[in-house]
Amino acid sequence: MTSTSHTQRSDVVEMIGDFRHEVSDVELARRQWRKNRARRSLSVATASSILVIVLIALLLATSPGWAATQQAFFSGEYFMEALPKVLEGMWLNVRILVVSTVFVALFATLLAAARSLRGPVFFPLRFLAAAYTDLFRGLPFIVVLYLVGFGIPALNPTTRIPVALLGGTALVLTYTSYVAEVLRAGLEAVHPSQRAAARSLGLSHSQTLRHIVVPQAIRKVTPALMNDFISMQKDVGLISTLGAVDAIRAAQTHQASTYNFTAYVVAGLLFILLSLPFIRLSDWYTARLQAREQQGGAF
Figure 1 (cartoon, rainbow, N blue to C red):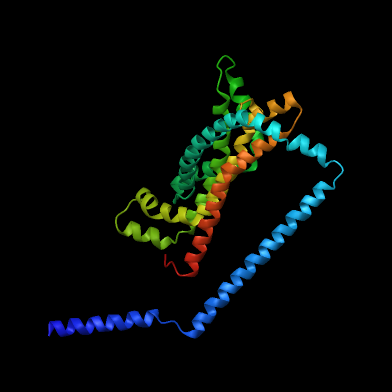
Figure 2 (figure 1 turned 60 degrees about the horizontal axis):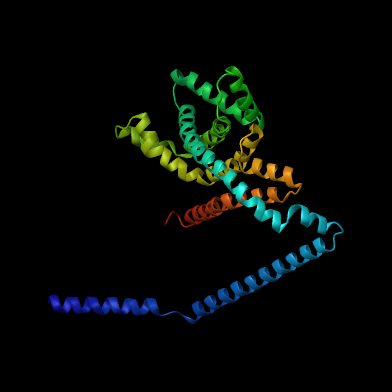
């Protein structure tokens, strides 16, 4: 009996497998149509891109001042000459960015948690957190940079504070307010039933935030957080206004000695290369979330 049942089960599995492998003519026609459409779209996109590039090249080549502009901004000789110094300065930007990101993530989480506290007893914390975010979201970053970079050293002129530390402090103060508001929006987007279920299981308020609310909130606002991180990558170049020898200041020094602006192009390309992986990661994650919502969270 067992052998007969096993044989029947194997036959059923084989029949199901054969059925799955069989594809109707209609489905084959649909797949072929999709392939043809994809090829057509790729051909049109390639042709239009080539046409645009050719038009831009012709426009630049026929411009009266293109030769002088090319020599002043896109000189291969000055590009290779400026690259080592600008790349060395870029390393300072990267270090400040990494350290600032850690502190921004920490302080912004605390600030968002303070604004999400319930009950009248926590009103002073909520008020201070709201005042902080309103203040630093309203101030331009360059103003915060000047106030921190020149104001704090003036309090004690005998002590020399590293410029990188001052610039990083201004970056943390400003972007903590931005990221805190994004995190707060994510916290409020989590359904209240999640908090109620966690509290009913005996979790405290801090445990509910740490284990239940914050992980869900971060998933909801990850694209917005990545955008803030990309913006912080660009603004870290403003620390050169305080005198830090970063990529921008290295490019400025090279331009002052050669009277050629190619070094700024080098710095711009390095910043693009630094931010491009995170831009693509943000686009990929946004598309993944959208597909997941459309398929009902199947993956």
